[in-house]
Image (cartoon, rainbow, N blue to C red; front, side):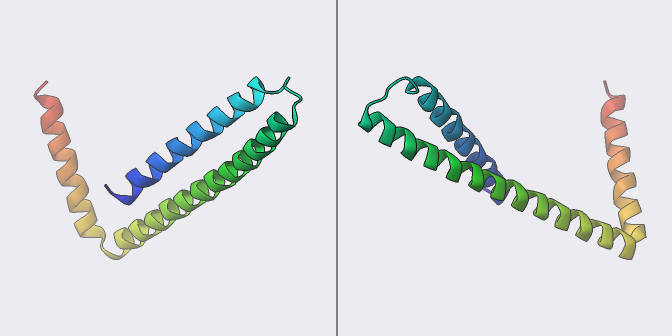
Length: 101
């Protein structure tokens, strides 16, 4: 399992927690008991933490994507001919595959 798969799985899990917590809060909105109020307060705190963590993960993923794009851009500028050769080879293979249809 690579880092991007782990990140995607974590994001999906956090989104599920957020959805479940929101549903729980909606379902218990009419219950005024002290126990329900404490549970709602705890759920709201957990929901806030999950949203913060999701935001941090999204920012981290975006920063990694920007860094990868910058590195790729620098490589292409430093090595234009190998980059052109690779792009031409990929284009040729895609053309062959599409031509077989």
